[in-house]
Image (cartoon, rainbow over all chains, first blue to last red; front, side):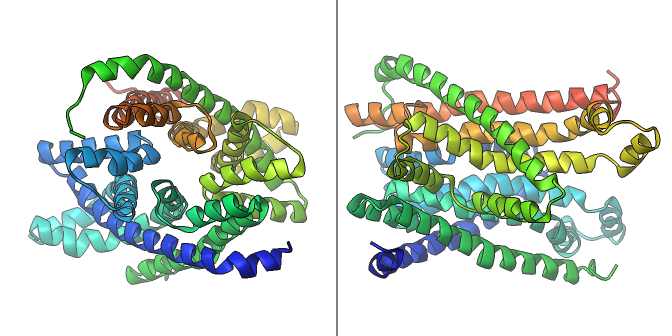
Length: 223
Length: 228
């Protein structure tokens, strides 16, 4: 069977899987960004309880494997009466796992804002909330976007794991087609290629564009 | 199905889980050793003066880095036999992990080498040191501490990615948990224990790496010893 015959027969199925992969990617990215910001801010809080919660969360999710967390969410939570759909479990597990990594990036970004900016805001008698919102947060984007972009590419790769909890994504379809046709080279090769194309020609350029945008916003590109 | 934690069941499966943990540690260790060598190969590919090799090297690294480890595992495991190369799940897993993380480690090496100031090279040139001597006595000792955090992170990273090996049937910790869970139809204890075992291993490992990082920096005089 030639590769083109393979593509014309199984291509549509793989495309459907790709759509699901992108759905997981988008949902998990939104979740991880929100979690990163919340826990990143909690992490620099002066209140030891809030800081402790954030540190515990981050250490826990960074210390265990994503696959274990995913299976835990999908197979163990029903024991506690919380049944998540496979898709939800996948998005929540990935989002919470990457949120822990992202929180550290956000924390690093906030601490990397020059001290003079904090002092300036303080001197101008800004409230802490306003200081964060108007002065510090807008400046952290150029700092955190490059590492966050790497993390997002990692997240795209991590979405492949949701296939193991029966989400019908690209990996799942590839496995399925493999078990029907035994054309392993074609189906896994195509899947690898699709992931590569998503990452190289869509995700990475988009993130670079965001970086340029953020740098322009604070006037860093003109220096 | 109830949410009650059963201690008798926990202790019944504990020995099995601990044995499997040894397998996990072994897999991470071997995978890391291979990754270090592969990283070196990619680094050499990157630093050779031939433009075409540099380009091919970069594309390969880029490709491996931007595709999921899971599918790479399947690819190696299912495709190689079609070309008449039949390898055990263990070997496939180790090769794939080595290749995958080798690309990351090559970046760590590169970053570390570039972190050594250019003036150091120029000084060695001026003193007429040979290239090998320059690497051995001047550049590598300075590059090493820069590489430590990254290398340590990827050691922990490999450790946390070993559960993926269970998908091709390597009998490591996660595989054992799934098997035990399926046999008794109780997933609460096995999966929770896997999580806890991972935590008890990876948090001290991360702390240990941070300590080494500090020690090396101290020995290099980059940071001052804190006054007690």
